[in-house]
Image (cartoon, rainbow, N blue to C red; front, side, top):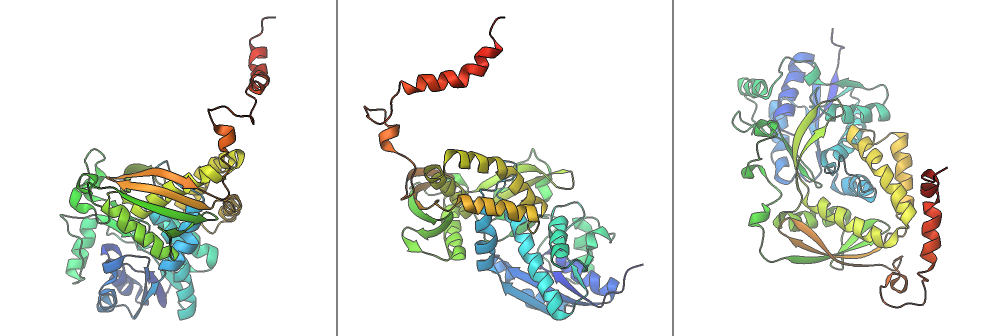
Length: 399
């Protein structure tokens, strides 16, 4: 028996899943449905969304511009931690979910709704990310996850349901990709991508040109950092979302940021995802470059040991967990002197480092030089090596 629900706030994108879910909630729960769409940089994907939602039965729709908050309070903290999941994934979808869920809970409170709903499948990571945030911010909220309830267990079934109920959709049986776009990236799953041996079709990509078709002339840029955050491009101050948007265009033009990987989902299965992260890739490279100049060796090494754990927490959906917040405090403390300028060359899918400088630089030319110096006594290295070799020698000493 389903619990009686009067009003539900649905995380709505206007794509296949949430379009069907909107109609399904109204029919199956006989409740009022308020849609919520977060503007995280989807551009034209938001066009016509209000009309579509209301035609499908929504009583109201919120379309909130969260772009600045997204980059400032979610993307940049994650980039300060250099978070990468399983060596390749810059967590573009993962980091968007806690913000969407947070705003959804706020709207539910504002509207007096007794439930929230999402379009994540029962096989994926997003159901966990959404619901961990829901329960962290409102422990008593009712959650409806249609994919775990209904009998529409495939994209083909959803397409048929949409056609039968006259729901406008852009996905077709011939092109059944599932995509997610925001200011940090665009992801692609499903369809032909479910065979890891087959290459992604070129017409699938949206944010980036192929490196082969990128300009034959490289482009040089300078990124300035303050305390681990990028603040200027080529000397021009920019807000967080404007800066990332600018780098997305530059990176996309030069074919930067394509990743094709098979990843381990939190629920236990492997899945293949193809990602476009042009601006985020540039910032990730630039950030590591300025860190190499300004971070103490042991701080850098200790921080790097914690990156996989931090990235895992974001990927799994534990953004509002105390351990992620504790790790964030550590990451941010390490960033206090991560300030300076990085010069890069963008060329045919590559981000090439040309130079870096900082007032907080720990690089000492007088110490590092291969030329004659009066600062470092090379003879001292002999004792240093012998002390470090002592345990190795003892291990192999003959009795």
